[in-house]
Length: 260
Length: 260
DNA sequence: TAACACAGTTTCGCTCTGCGGAACAAGATT
DNA sequence: AATCTTGTTCCGCAGAGCGAAACTGTGTTA
Image 1 (tube, rainbow over the protein chains, first blue to last red):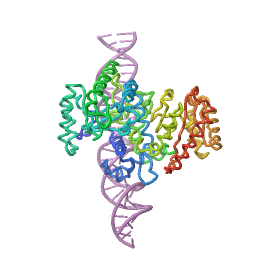
Image 2: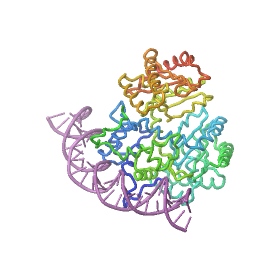
Image 3: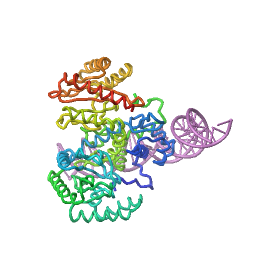
Image 4: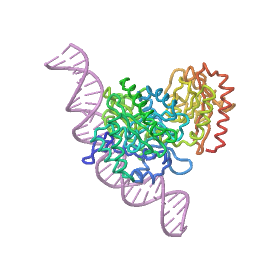
């Protein structure tokens, strides 16, 4: 797994620990943790409060953190946007297939998403949705879980069995309720992928969302995932398999022809 | 200016230099510099190549950089997206006014943008545009210049005169052709803002784009800017002032009523 | 084929940076 | 007034991060 921690002994002299710590501190913020104080940041990151104080001071100076006007805590600042944009602006496949994704989203009341793996999640690089689809308001940058989402299962299914086992092992360390059921679903998805070329998530990630996903590779071996999802009251499981799965497979075929 | 460099003498012991250096290295990447090697990164950041090598090694380990499959260089990885998303997801005013922005964009063939200052640019936090407007394909995270864009001029106009002078000074250090003309335009925009409450950019940022912008403050004193722009062959200067400026002022009035 | 150029990595001695426990400060609470 | 909580600063220390130099690998040139 490419984002693995450096070796713990001996110390990796090429690894810049202070940089890693500062970035981890930024990652403590999320859509559900918008405002954090030094105590909270210390608890989340495990860093001593003096270290946290120096990190927050530095990040504030650089425009990545700002003081929250309502409290003595911090929130992210706009500097982080510049980083994300430079990434999105250069995802070639995204730019090329977005019109096709838009078309699919407009024809049906669905969302069409393009994701890549980031740590133990799938992160949205592009998302096109029908204007009526509001329950799936996920935006570029949002993450969904590897184990329960169609996209995550598709990613895992694309791996060699031993690599998939390694991920399942990591994910299992963060054991949630019904973990074994999730493992079973991941295994089923891998079989479905082998037989049909796609993976499903029917009310697993979000109780009211059905989705199908197909992984594909761009040049250099990077795996991306295309998915279609919609609210289950509009998009039945049967429709997912009979209408959207073939369209997704066709779209991936088009992408593969582009030789990206 | 909140993103100013720390004092050069004596050294600021609270400032974490290694973190700052690593983040600056990430900022070397942009929509026009998608792939960079160590030599290029060394040139852009001014860091010795051994330092660059350690930074790129660390950022790669953490999922913020990846090797480009076509060369021995680097490109940004998806980890940077997670940072930007956590910011966008928590901009309260953005969420509240996006429907109003969408309405405005749909009624006319324009883009309606929400920006904040980030370093010496205005960065898009939200952008809604009519589906026909393709010449202004700027996305969340994209930056536009302070001196020539309506949004930048609106930001500068909202400052006290001495603060504006400080920015002009900084900008002037990066002297471009016709800098004095740009300063004159900034001054004119400040006067326009004083008299009318809005600023203009008519073919200044982009030769074929006319725009109007209005600054406003959210709680805590943060200045944001709303703007409307469109291709000059569709949106005349007269229309900008007679149709869109009043609508923008009205929209800002609505925002001010929300007390954000 | 050997020499050279270039880009990237690694070494290594050094310095000063980043560290974290402790002390301090400020505000809130009891 | 005493105590608690959160955040900042101090300060002595150790080793992290530094950058010049050496090394490595690849491509180019004579």
